[in-house]
Image (cartoon, rainbow, N blue to C red; front, side):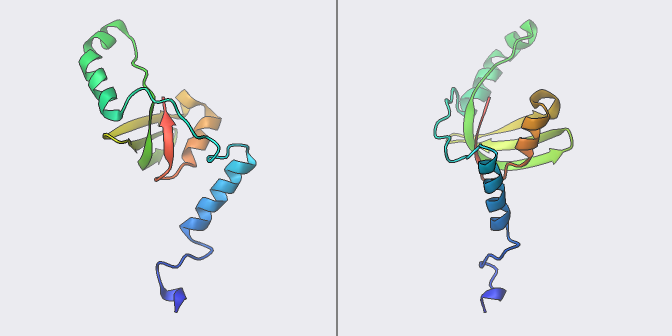
Length: 123
């Protein structure tokens, strides 16, 4: 009877895939449960507001606004060398643009292994 129940997970389930990814991370020395703190500088809403308030000056001077945000990844679209993700924190949601050229091969390959639902920190 349990075989027909969609709530029962089997060996080909998403749970197995996630456990395999966790095992691979731990073997690579990147246990996600050991990282317990990420220094956040802004919420998503505060980052968007600060950029909007200073967009003209930042653009004119060719400067960038650096922020550190943490939250749950609620969406991800991988499209070859570039990807987009949405991070939901306690105040709102922000979209990330992730590029292999900006991150490098190894870091971008790591990003592609992240799952929706993972809690991440980004700068």
